[in-house]
Image (cartoon, rainbow over all chains, first blue to last red; front, side):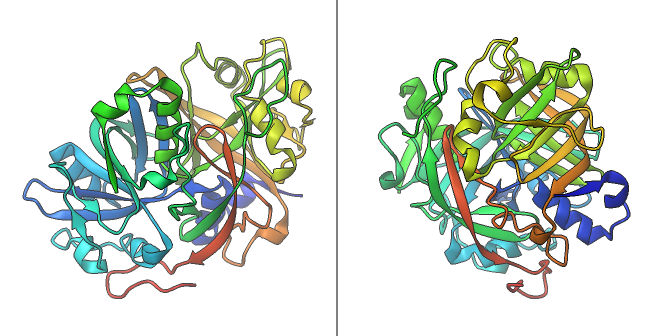
Length: 210
Length: 210
């Protein structure tokens, strides 16, 4: 295997380095985060830095880039406190990626790319109608990361929408049956195949496949 | 699609809810985090909450569970400042999962499950020899998340090891060629297939496949 030092990585051209570093950290969950502002205008953006923080309470975080690079999603969440996270399926992955373009604040990415905002059960923020797995969140905390001016935005899951046929008997969701995608790097989208599930591991014996 | 409310989710049995919530948030990067303590004893644990924070500087975060549940990795990182993150491949996924068992502090998970610690180029923390994509980090910041007593642990990438044949001309890493796995939920491991890469998106036109 080849060794890459920080000294070498720092000499690389900016986009080459960004592609390398963004894929070095492994496959990522990728979803569309949907919000509206205080006037009801919708906003939609693709995010690949979504992280599970806890199950009870059900807390989910995402990394918001510095405000000058990505202001609208975070501003809307701060203003309205509610937002939705919507999995991406192959049927709309190209236009989901397109939401990463820097549209003016006056333009809704729903309109620009051709996705459909959907309001469900009086939840305040719009869902993406095309998405097959989606959940609604209420803002809990915005933690500034001073190291690079990003933010860890933490929300609590308030509701979820999905087809019951992907739920296994123990509550596990077969996301591959819903065709939810994973991502890698800045711009690559993947389909997945289940390899294995394992028992809860205990020190006395090696965990076996379920 | 079926609607699941927070009120309903809160009534569920604990493991059912944990499986549901952990898979609702989508596919995850999963890796082994390797450390040693001040006396040189090694520790290894599987983590699925690794999140890209920035490319320049190259910052990576992971969520460490509350100290009473997962004390050793974080204590070692605090004590020694250096750690490694090692992708998981199918050839050792079962024993990688086994590192999630609660071993005594006196036992190294490397020995308990049968993986090989490897010291490379004088980097202070051990790598997992069996892993085909791995990188070394220096601790930058530990941010307590008071909402549920977890921690966002942020490190800077100092070095990386991988086979050059997975690097594309633009720096993107074809992780599927290295057989790096993704995870879902608490205990499921996935292989992946590249679906598509897309151009850098601009407002003027819909981004096309690369």
